[in-house]
Length: 183
Image (tube, rainbow, N blue to C red; front, side):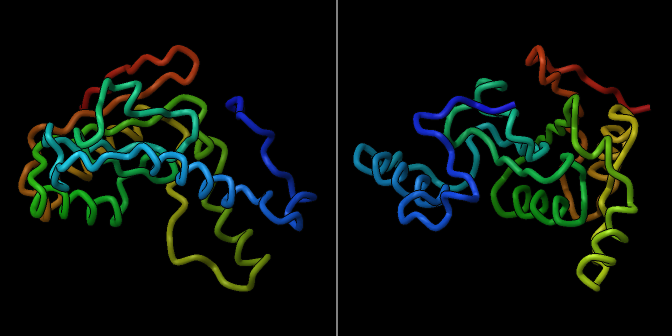
C-alpha cells in the first residue's frame, strides 16, 4: 500500500541524479516546513503523560488515529511494536525523566512480523557472515504478542508506573483499535 505523493518517489535508477534522492526530498520538505514553523514553546515532557509503543509500519498514523496533537505523548516505534529491552529503556527514560504514567501498546493487522521467523537471523548470518545479536521477535498470534508485551511492561523493575498499561490491535483496513485484555 502506498500513499500518493506530490512527486513520484525516486527509484534506484534515479539515485545518480542530483536532487532526486528520497532524503533530498525530505530535506527540501523540511525547508518548506521551517519557513512557517513557530516554536510552540513546550518542553519534552508529554502533556498527556502517556507513552505509545507501536509498530514502525508506515500505514499507522498514530497521531491522527488517536486524536493526538504535537506534544501530547511519547511515541516509541520498532518492528512489530514488540516490547524489547530497548523499548523498556525508552519507557524508563520516558517515565523517570519525563513524567509519563500510562503506556498504550499498539500492534496491527497485516504485520510483517507475522510472516517472519527467527530463521531470518540465520539467513542474515549466511549472507553477511555474522548473526545479529538481536532477536527478530516474530510472532504468529497478534493477541498473544500484545499480552506478552503488556506482561513485559508490567513486570519490568525499571518502570515505576506499571498499573496503567493497555494493549491494542489496530486494524489497517478499518482504522479501529481492538483492545486485548491480559489473561
